[in-house]
Length: 145
Image 1 (tube, helix red, strand yellow):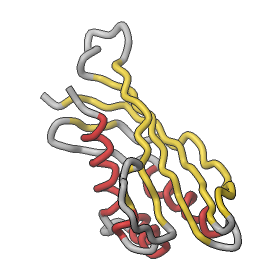
Image 2 (cartoon, rainbow, N blue to C red):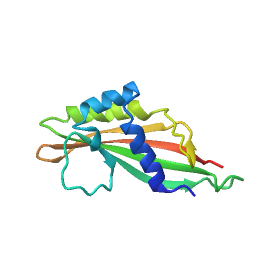
Image 3 (tube, rainbow, N blue to C red):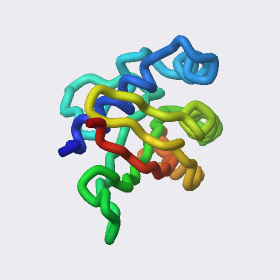
């Protein structure tokens, strides 16, 4: 069985892989590459701008012969910025969309179809100088034999 943590770890690793031009551009906007983390990170020190991977859920496909091997998954990437304007965080959310849309993951225990962009939500203020934008994705996941 594929676990949520495996998928989330693969997404974090893909976003940290700065060898692709779209991701290298994303890295250039973040405080450090270490600020790409899973949403559940419980550290005490943060640097902005930053992004967090929010894994929503993993559903087996229904009524198919491959029910135990094919899953649908939804996740989002939340971007944070500490700025006087929402411009920076909106730009980061757009870079996240460019970096992951139509990408595929190929891990030891699973592989995905193309990651599909669902939406890029506009920034909202969550503190005096803290902004948050969220980019939503979906994908199909196939368990490797």
